[in-house]
Image 1 (tube, rainbow, N blue to C red):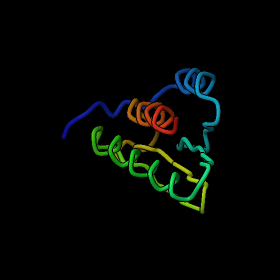
Image 2 (spheres, one colour):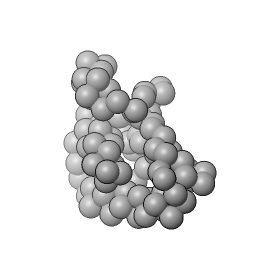
Image 3 (cartoon, rainbow, N blue to C red):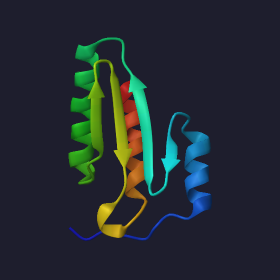
Length: 97
């Protein structure tokens, strides 16, 4: 599947970070840790993230530690952050609610 691999500018990333508290930039990655009320709810959240990831063909690294779920996003084949990363991040924020 072909898609735009243009890297986001620092200004674009700062705009995203200002409007999405909880996310941070670490080099060429966006990351956020969510804490859910129970382990079962954390796993259900991961399932919703999987649906989002498949829909956009863009899959985060997911670390599950009991009730805490950490998502890390980057566009590996573009060598950094593209429009796909904040897109999936935004949808994950909606899926946690």
